[in-house]
Image 1: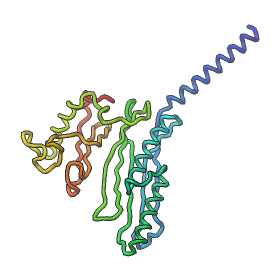
Image 2: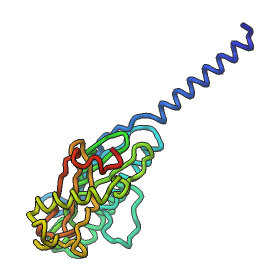
Image 3: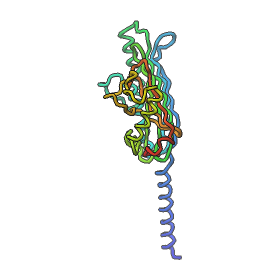
Image 4: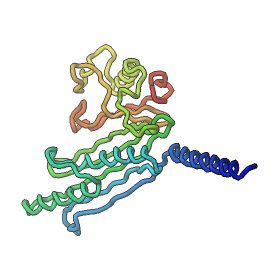
Length: 256
């Protein structure tokens, strides 16, 4: 074998090795760790203050897809702290938290007898990891004054192959078929007779027609439909959750 051939083979092997390493990096499996933030406005003691407690998943893989997913998660968390819809959106969770505490201190300064503190409690978790879908849930309680705070449960459904967020319509191969089953489950749970108007027991569905919620999550066992307070009923009624066994609706899903 000539020297020229030896170097050719060494170069070829190097190229193959580089391709293998790069390929493995691109296909690195997404994993998640939990990141926690716990802080307050520093004036607590026996007095009201601003308290923040956050726990949320972070995609750990060193890929552009993981970065995209983390950007979506970060924007989700930051969104909870937007008190004034006309205010500038903060670029990081840390800045949003600091702004939340600052707004409380401003209110307290303007109203020395302000008897309540601000509170933000946000908990995120990974519900499901599949080849085509990662489903994340976020429960939150926010209080910034007034008669009561607001609790919510929302979901992010992400494509692990692209890092993009699924629209609800993309979750289904047959939305109408799924909706029929969902309405039946909802009526059974809320004791609404089949032959009566969906709003006959006090719900607020638009045009007296059942609609799927904005918040749809998926676990290994169920499709979860969640209506937050004010979505279809009063605050006093609270949120409404319907769980549908996955096997009953699998033929209507596009992502499993």
